[in-house]
Image (cartoon, rainbow, N blue to C red; front, side, top):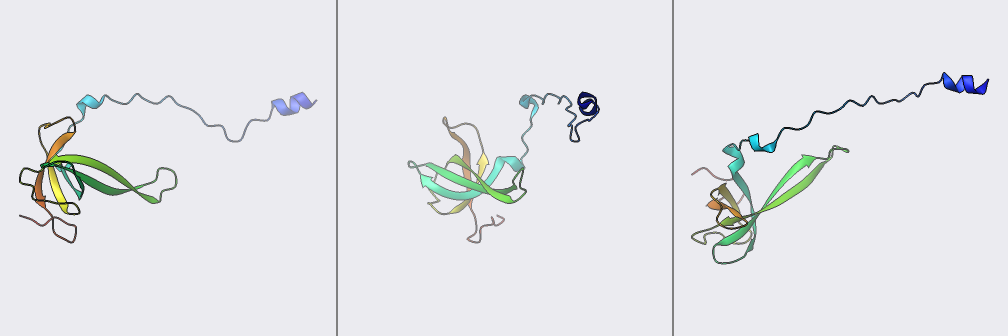
Length: 118
């Protein structure tokens, strides 16, 4: 009698799992002009013409939806040594100059944090 009773009960929360499609290869990813320009704060100077830029952004947490800070560091080439630690600068993508340097200095931004038009 008990086996018949439990045999007819179905679970309330059954998740139907569907196979997900394989993600496309990243080789077809195109880089736009907007993605080649970055703005951030200079955090270190590691040589006469090499500097490191910290780019910070706010993204929503995937589970809790609260906005959290994400950051990334990029090395860039500064030919004239025109910026120092703490400056807000804009960099642009260029040919690879070394194993880590893929950007070059464009201009120093205004003190309020947004880049002024040239």
